[in-house]
Amino acid sequence: MTSFDIHQILATLPHRYPFVMLDRVLELEANVSVKAIKNVTINEPYFVGHFPVRPVMPGVLIIEALAQAAAMLAFASGGSSAGHDRVVYLVGVDNARFKRPVEPGDQLLLEAWLERIKGGVHRYRTQASVEGQMAAEAVIMCTERKVG
Image (cartoon, rainbow, N blue to C red; front, side, top):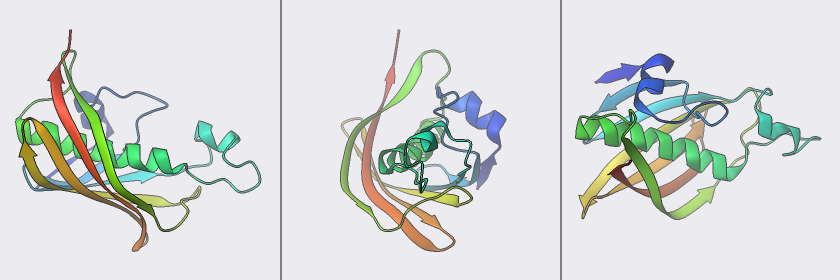
């Protein structure tokens, strides 16, 4: 099992502020699974408008955080990183369900398990939780491509 700090995440993923959704990768086993965390703070730019009276992390950004965790697993499984010429594109989301709101102060545990790779499309079962309570789950599909 491997772990990654923010510097290693930034060296692997092409995302930058304000769109980096991972703070640390706790465990990663190539071709198997990944566990990562996102510390949700009131300083996130989307909280200004979602919602001013009761800040809640948008569901679409929880899915994005799960997709970034899956991308870390995809790169590790393929032995590559985004660099300047590789990107993992999100190509599908199935069965997304949201079970509890995610609010400032929460630590989101993001987990992804590789289900299969077929025709260059990686399929992951994913789950986001806060303090042992499921916040969201989805099946995420992505593909790695050379760009430029």
